[in-house]
Structures are given as structure tokens and as C-alpha cells.
Amino acid sequence: MTTPVSSLFDLNDRTAVVTGSSSGIGQAIAGFLAQAGARVILVARREDRLHALVNSIQKDGGQAVAIAGDLGDVENVSKIAARCQEAFGEVHILVNAAGVNPREPADAVTPEKWNQTIQLNLSAPFFFAQALVPRMKAAGYGRIINIASLQSVRAFPDGIAYGASKGGVCQLTRAMAETWSSDGITCNAIAPGFFPTELTGPIFENSERRNWAANQTAIGRNGELKDLAGISVFLASPASGYITGQTIFVDGGFTVK
Image 1 (cartoon, rainbow, N blue to C red):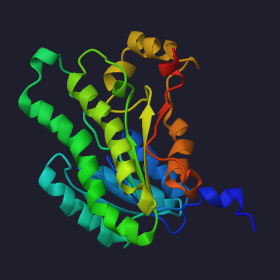
Image 2: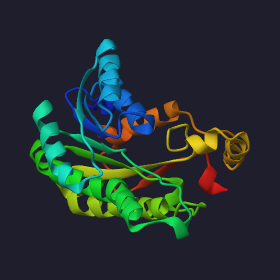
Image 3: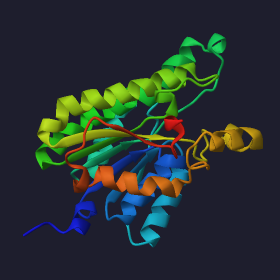
């Protein structure tokens, strides 16, 4: 019998870890995966915000737990990953959404800020995945979703450290796919355009810059967080089982112009 199409997007009996889920894109994706039936483990520094999201998900009938921790410290990554595996047992989905953008001119970037940006945006996704992959292999199912950026392929002012880290995310995604896909673990990246988040606050608070960003798209508007729902659930679900190593731009056509 042919598998019903609707079941290809069903995340019931799956567990997802979402880093950076206290705000912005990470918070939104955590909610989307919970709505699709996944048990969600929320990871970020701000514990109060995590618990607020847990309450919201549970109120809507979903399952979620919060694990507060700082992925900016490389020593913490494996410890946090171990705590995640204790929450619901197996982990099937990892969304690496934690990130930082210092927005500094190249001449002002210090080694400390450079290392902080690379650690959180590029190193933490790899080491978190490395820690979770053995359980994914044992389960025969894994979905790793990294968050890339327009700056993975475009250079913007005051974005040299961020752009370098996000360019690295695309290659990390391909390398992860080459390494782990034969074990049933796919790895893809979502590259959002301009969405209203804490990181993009300086743009959305400035009407001229906000309108500029919208006018660069083919659709004619900036993104809304709900625009990430379909791609997030798709890449986490069985429906995307033959897609791996790809960076998918959800940018309203920004990169086609």
C-alpha cells in the first residue's frame, strides 16, 4: 500500500532539539515542530523565555522541556547535548538556530569577538550534531537542520565575522551530509532572508533599511516567521528523506535578483 502523503510530514513519536529557541527563528521553528507532533527540547541561555515557550507549547497540547545553557562555551556543548538525550530518550531532529551577529566594521573586530561568532554560529552546530549522531544512527533516523543566511553568499557591510561563519555553515552542511547520510541522517540548511528577529532589529527599526530589504526581493516584502513553517517541518520529516547537503533559501527571491 502506498504511504499516505499526509503521513510523510507527521512528526509524532519524534524528538527535536532546537537551539536558540528563546527568540526569533529558533523559537518559531520549535513551535512549528511541536505543532507537527514532535516532542521538543528547547535550548538557549535565557531560561525564563524557554519556560514561557514550554508553557505555550503544552497549552496547545504539545510536549516540550527547557534546557538552559550557553553554547558560546565549547566545553558546554557536549554536556548540554547529553542532557538533551536524557529528556525524552532518543533524539531524531536537531535544529541549530543559535547565533550571534556582532555587526562591526572589519577594522573593529577583535579576536575575542571573531572567536565568539565562529564558536556559536559554526563550531557549536558541528559539535552538537557530533554528540547526537550516535543515537540518530541507532534509531535509523536523523534530520539535522542548520540555519544559514543571505550572508552565506552575499557580503553585507559590518558583517565580516558573521558572513564568514555563515559561509562556513553551508560547507559544514555539505560535509555533514557526505559523512552521515548513508546512516539515514540527512543534513540541510535553511537560509532565511530578512525576518523580524532580535538579530535583525537594527534593520526593521529603520524604515529606510526595512523598505530597502523588501524591495530587493522578487515577492516585494520581507519575511514573516510563519513563512518558515513549511520548510522547517518538511526538512524534519520523512518527506525530505532523499534531500541532503542542500542550502534552501527562504528569502522571497532576494538572491535571484
